[in-house]
Length: 254
Image (cartoon, rainbow, N blue to C red; front, side, top):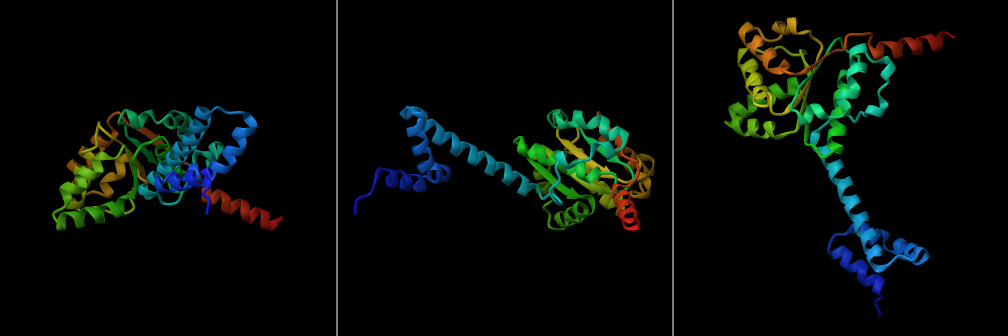
């Protein structure tokens, strides 16, 4: 059985795990003949395809590792429907400079105004730009911290938490914290303060955080750490979900 040079190349590409080279080889050979590529140009284009494939895979791996609550993108945001402050600050946040500068973002306001969508969309863009991201809800984070403390793995959790380029803490304010939980949350977020960026979404204005964490001194310290040099975005407005429901009902009556 005679093995052709093309088959030999495919076999070598498989062994070296150059999947893009293997998949595109036949098409590239044909295009090379038509375009009159030099040997160096042919090899360069094959390798470029492989690099692009691996870069795309890494992007998808970072998105998967972030554990986003659904995939939401900046392109899907209805910017005209966003609260005024959100619409104004979004072009600034889209540059991702706040992540490079280690600045926090606090998105606060009533439910349904796009806080989580905006946070996830920025997180996905960060993943696409080579940054490591973690998405978690504050209630889930509190449970994980308690478990880590019980298992004496709190230092390990802190170390891992501090390494992410961006952490998104969603739904602060939906579950109350006792003093111990408040201290755990404070210590965890303080480790990132001034060094790494954190996005926090909350339905409560800062003057109401005492409703969640009963220790006034701890609340004051937490607000001080989180808001230092942060982008504070008031997202109070009409709920997007409520507006959609009204539109549906109006259409039914027509």
